[in-house]
Each structure stands twice: as C-alpha cells, then as structure tokens.
Image (tube, rainbow, N blue to C red; front, side, top):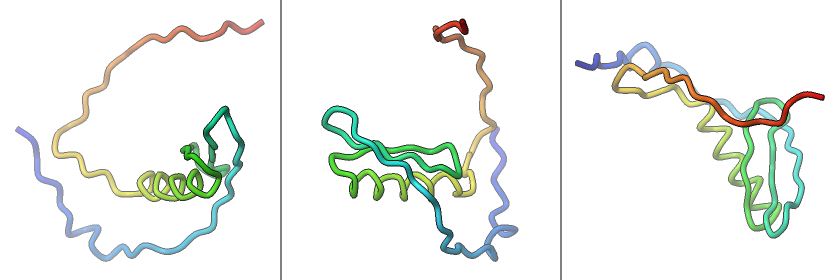
Amino acid sequence: MAKKLDKSKHEDIKPVMRGFTAMVWQEDDLYVAQCVEVDVASQGSSADEAIRMLREAVELYFEEPRATEQPTIVHFEAEVPSAP
C-alpha cells in the first residue's frame, strides 16, 4: 500500500525566477533548445517555440516529485556506439 506524502513540509517553499542559458539549433524541420545548466532539452517548430517548451521542461524538472507509490527500479540495456 502506498504512503501518502506529507505536503505540509513543502508548503512554505515559494518559487523564484532564475536565469538559464539555452543552446538552440535547427535539426531538419525542428528547432532544439537545450539548457546549459541542467540536462534538459526540448523542441519546437520555431526557435521561440523550442525555448517556450524548454522553459516548461525546466520548470517541471525542478518541481517536487509527486509520486503516490514507491518507484520501481529496472535495469535495461541499450545499444550504443563503442569507444574507439
């Protein structure tokens, strides 16, 4: 059975505006925006849209987790290029 999270200990935390840096480039028909300070990226049909989507992704990245159950840890494999 999942435990309920105690939200009261985080209610006094207020969000603040913080500046971030984005690298933006075009890949085919899409623009990619990647945050330099944290490992978050997004994309859009224009550079402005990619940055708007990146802003939302960064805000979600810093949001307090809201899990209602204990997470499951899973091992997986992926094929990646080998080092020379």
